[in-house]
Image 1: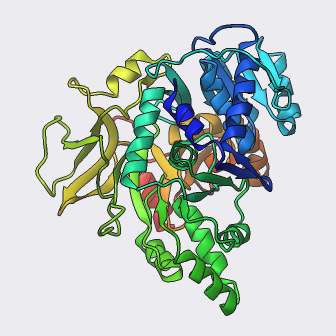
Image 2: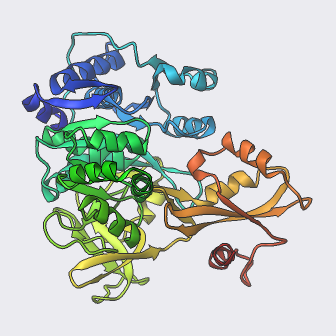
Image 3: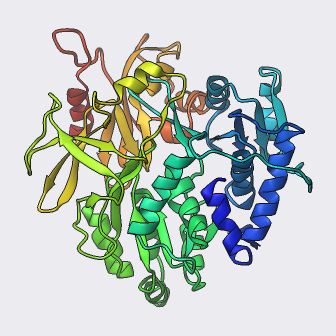
Length: 494
């Protein structure tokens, strides 16, 4: 049996999820997810790894559907609410999903796909009470496919097993001392590991309560904090930046009240992007909390973390988590000494199974002796790891998202007025990096407002460039390859 589901049976009467003004117990979650599973099975004994995509808002409904897919023997494929239809279509086509579960809010949005794919379209409101037998799921079976951008341009499906997920959860619940009396607020997107695993799954593994706020609003977050239930919070640096900015607009009495409540929190975590030291210090002044920084990615869950108890060094990510092995290697895959930069490589039961239907990319992602190559450069000194940068400048980290510059370039080049382009990440205090695009035009002019509207149907908002420059040609080396570092410098210099 899936251990996450089995553990829920020991917490039946406790609050599991709070969303849309309602509180749901673990018993209700188990019953509702069973009905989802039996509906998906539709008389079958086991889905046998069929991919089931779903597009629903975060909250109780989301968790029921995810658990239901797992309990029926399927592979969960969460879709992003903010992605345009072509991005959704890509995932459906790539996974060859056999069904799409959707809430009513997305019915018209998904309607064009009903003619493009011969698969089941299941409204999320149609899971009635049912009786039946559910299959026994071996933990080595594949559980989930999450899509992550890579240097190839097109997103890759990262396949994790139930055993991978369990190890990713327990490394955090042990290291961060999760408890059944914890109550966490989730403001993160639920197609991303941060929201799915670090927040929701860790809470439910522990018998704790996960409260959802589907749409981020700084005022609403502080209001919930002041209700005295939430004691754990995790977010990306961009969210902390926005909370700090909102706090500064409040009256002194309101600021004092919020600060008093924040000081009582057990744990606050920042991740998915580098945390500026200035943001860490500003949040500490407001909350009395030193944010815990950690390091991970879709392929490995979390691998390195600052300590729950002990010094948290600003600008550092800490030590390897329990059950995770970490090492640094140079470009020749040789060990580096303390204080010398090298690529971060990870090994352990937390590491993903494969890239979906991409055996070459999967093989290339590992060393000959089985270590996953993260592509991130770090160093180890005085007992702590520090991230220095990435092997590939074509990966941009903005607002907690890992974005492929090549994917954006491919889209921009399809515009009739754009001859060529180059996309880079530009350092930004709030977002970590913002996306900059250098455009080489066919005629020398382009309507920027029309371009932004055109991009809305091609890319999710977080992948759209925020800054543009125009050039006659892109900076290139003697081999004709675009030199991204020089291009980024043009944006930085202004």
